[in-house]
Length: 239
Image (cartoon, rainbow, N blue to C red; front, side, top):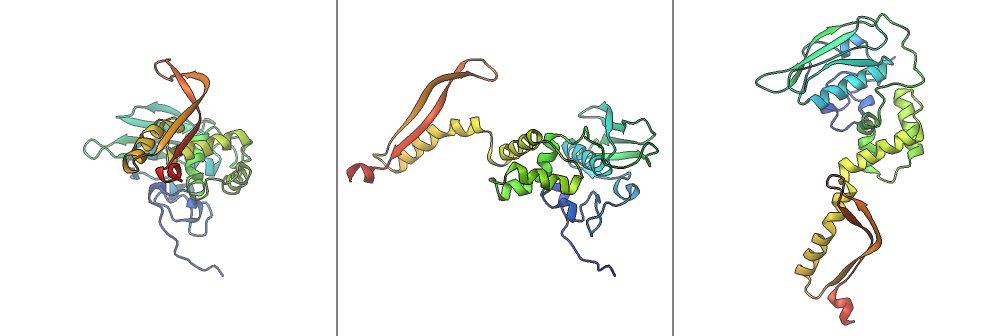
């Protein structure tokens, strides 16, 4: 006999590492972790704080049900509409509410009447950024988790064997979201070293370059490439 177990709610997939085992607000899965019927998971009236959260909800839904969609209308301040890519009558339309600025699903035409729901070889919505959102909790807890482990994890909850390079990009996307862009981090180094020197007078430091330059992403101006950083506290100098 089945036993009901209360599981934590995941608010709009803020922590997505175990969303396939939770009762999410989007109702994508039942408490046992099995996919619920389309009628229960996709319905009119669902609201999302941002367009990004709405897009993730739709992508997660179609990946789980193996039904790709295409975007027919995309206006960041008006509406967002997707239809079945295989040509049946399934479609979802959402609009931004005037006063709250939240996004609300205003109409849903379902179910799908196209081909079977068996896993396809690949899925157009199974992008690196989407996968990054799904593995964000895992990478945040263990940044050293290997790509091979993530490939198996993704296969376990989507049924898709995603190639190594896409999962690597997904992990890099998560690392950037959690720890910041590496270029921004490098730009903080002189400020951090100056702060250390301010609170530890007599500290010596230097930044070594490797002689190469790369173009600035926006201006095109040459930027030096850092090779290593060295600093020494005054106590070490005296000793």
